[in-house]
Length: 201
Image 1 (cartoon, rainbow, N blue to C red):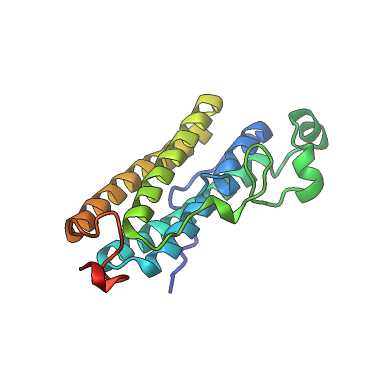
Image 2: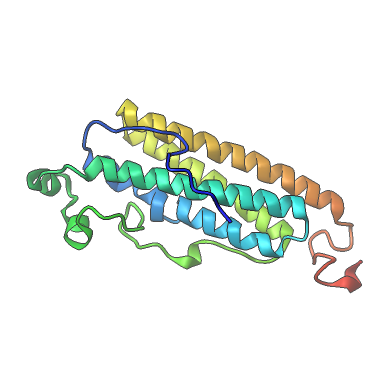
C-alpha cells in the first residue's frame, strides 16, 4: 500500500552529540503524546469513519505521523551514536544505554515504555476527531517544551518543523469535525452515527 521514499520528510544532519537532548526528544517517539501513538490512532480510526473524505484524511495524517516517527528516531540516533563511555555516564544516558545500547526503544522522557492505552479509537466520528485534535495540541505542547530546553539550532529547526505540522494537523481535524457535524442531525449529533444505528435517522 505505501511507497517508501528513502529520505526524511525534513532532511537534517546533526553535527554534535547531545545525549541530554536525546533523552527528552525520545518522548516524541514513545511518550504519551508521541508520533508512534499518533500514527496508530489515526490509522486505526479510519476503518470506522463513516465518511470517505475523513477516512482519507486519517490515512494521510497517520502516514505522515509515521514519517515524523522516523524523523524523531533519526534525531535521537544522530544525537547519541558517537557517544564515548564518559559522555554516556556523565549525561545520565547510562540507564538507557545499559538496556538498549544505541538502539531506538519507544519510551517517554521519564523512562516509561510506550503503552497502547495511550491512544484511543472509539468508533464514533465526533469522539475520535475531538480525541485527535486534543492529541495534536498535546504533541504541540510537548514540542514547545522541548524547544524551551534545547538551544542547539540544528536540533531546534527539526523540532520547529515537527511542531508546525502538529498545528496543521489540528486545523485539518477541526475542518473534518465541522464537515462531520454538518452531516449529522440533531437526533444523532452526540449520540450515534446513523450508519451504526439506523433507527437514529
